[in-house]
Structures are given as structure tokens and as C-alpha cells.
Length: 434
Ligand code: XLS
Ligand code: NI
Ligand code: NI
Image (cartoon, rainbow, N blue to C red; front, side, top):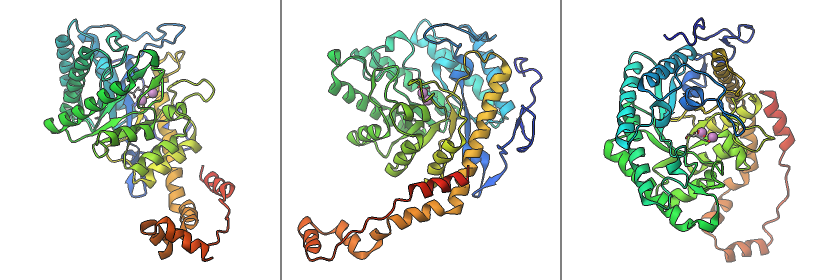
């Protein structure tokens, strides 16, 4: 153990009445809910970038955090890994996630960056031995360096496409080597700043070709994890091509990849796209592409991606309700793609931000499970659509053309009677569990 978190013991479950700041009040990893341990339901992951690489800057000011591992050497990258695994141990999280740029210094050439990544990958592999922490997903940072300012796969310059492809190959190799359960593509720069200089058709074609190559490479190396796209409507691009779940599904269908690629849905991105988190999850589940979640909220007033730790149990109850209805996570999990506020300087802040977020998620999931077990919402939903169970209704959907349907309506056998949607009653029901 390093001395960064000195004096902080591993966080344990002490129950709702505990006043120990360094304890879980709701997250008991071994508690069985709907036949599964909470740890196996929630599958928490710590995001390396916000917790260990981000320095606290905002558009008006630079670094606020002073961490002993900040700097561009391999020795500091190893120290960063040591501290990161200390945090994983303190929290008892089963997973973490990283980008290449979070974990290794950028080299003077592609080859040097690759060597650095491979060295750190070996270092991670050694640290993971004898530990429970696994890799939820790996990904490539194709947005920070200036070479990616006009996109990666969608760049007007084929050399950038090539650089991006070689980078994703390296990150998929690292993810595969570490037994990662998913590989994520978030295309922050895959979009445009102005249509005046953009060939939209060409760029989206390029994106499809790139994605097909990702899938081909996955099969070539025998990676059995899930390829995930993380939708976001904008920021940093003015318009991002992976706008939301519906848009991503359209792209996957267009390139015949809907059985190969799923989505990683981030709460803050859903809000930026004008949706609720549960909407995005429910739609992905309905389309058969639900994969994983990034569990970080936006500020509802600010209109950008503030990446805050979750703290709203009723909202999370609805999100986990949709996840449980869809059968729960398979390879996915709950990744805290969340960062401290830039004034939260202390090592304790990093621990308590995660511990509190894990408690909030546990409360949300338990409420969701209770709502499902109660069955009231599902009964009301089934009742609302019950008319479609009749043989006549099924026949209409499957076989009848407009002439046949119109003939039945004209013959007087059809006379719809409006029924209450019962929204307030259903909201009252939800409120009973949160
Ligand atoms: C940025 C994204 C990013 C992805 C990983 O808004 O959320 O952090 O999760 O590249
Ligand atoms: Ni994210
Ligand atoms: Ni985000």
C-alpha cells in the first residue's frame, strides 16, 4: 500500500444507522436481492481518468489537485497504478476502466507510446493477480491530443484514421490481455464543428468502416467481451454522430452491426440529449443493444457534462428498474465516470465520493427490485395492453391489410373507449418504494 490513503481502512457495510463516514450504509455486497448478490447486480467500476488523471481544470482555471503521481514518467505511471489499486481495495470494487492516455505517458513516437502502454498493461496484470478487481472495459483516448481535433475515424485526413486504428488495436490488445469484459468506443470528436467544412455522408461512412474493422479485429484475436458505443449528443463536438441510443441503433443497422455492438449509456449524456436516463436504457433494452452504464449525473441547470457522482435515489430506482426488467447486466456494469468537484482536494474526498455513490446505487437497485417484486407497475402495464392479447387484434397485426381492417370498422364491430393512463397512481406507486 502507498501512503496516499494512509489511515483509511477498507470500507465495510455497517447498516443504515451507522454514523461512520467511512462505511457503507446501504451497499452490502453480499446481500442477496432477486437471487443475486448486490455486488454481482451492480458490478461497480472506478474510472481511472477522472480519479487519477484529471487535474481539476475547468475552462477558466487550471490544475487544483496536486497528486504525487502527476508527471510524464513511467515511474509516476506505476505510482499512479499503485494508488489506483489502493482505492479499488479500500472500496472493494470488482472493476475498473481506463483509456490508454490515463495510464501511460505519451511517447515521442507511436512505438514509444505503445511500449509504455504494454509495460503498464503488464504492471496491471501483476497487480490484478490475487486481487478481485477485474477490468470492466478498456478504451482509447481519441479526443485529447491535437491530432484528433477534427475527429479520429471521421477525420478528413486518412493518416489520422490510420493512427486511430493503430491506437484502438493497441487498446483492444491491452483490454484482451487483462481479461476485459467490454471494449468501449466514445467518439467525442466523431462529429463536426461546422457543416460548412464537413462532408457528413463521407464521415459517417468512414465511421461505419472503422466500426466494422473493430468488430473484425475482436473476432480475429478471440476477444469475447462486448463492443460498446457510448452515445453523446455533443461536447466536445458541436454535433456528435453517436447522438443518442436511437441514432446509434440506426448506425448499427446501416452497417449491419446490430448483433455485434451494444451501448454504454451515461446518465449525463442522456440528459444532454434531452432524454431521461431510464428512457435511454429502456430503448436500448427494447432494441436488444443494452450493454452497460456510466453512472454520473449532470447538473440540470448548467447544460454541460459535469460528471458528478450520483445522489438521487428515486431517479436511480427508475434506471435500475429498466435494467432489472431487461434481465440485469451481463458483461456490463455501473462505471462511475464521475469526477470530484475541483475544490474536493483531499484523498478522503475520493474515497467518500465513491462510497456514497455506491450506497445511492444500492438504494436505487433495492427499490427497483422491490418495485418489480411488488409487481404493481408490471400488472398495470400488462392491463393497459391487454386488448392486444385477443385473437382478433393479433390477426390484425399479423395479416389484415387496410381494406380488411376498414371493413371491420365499417361493419360496426370496433368502437374504442378511452381509458385512464393512471400516471399519477403509478407515480404514487413508485414513490412508495423510494
Ligand atoms: C465523456 C465520456 C468519456 C467516456 C470514455 O463524456 O463520458 O468519459 O466514458 O471515453
Ligand atoms: Ni462516459
Ligand atoms: Ni461523459
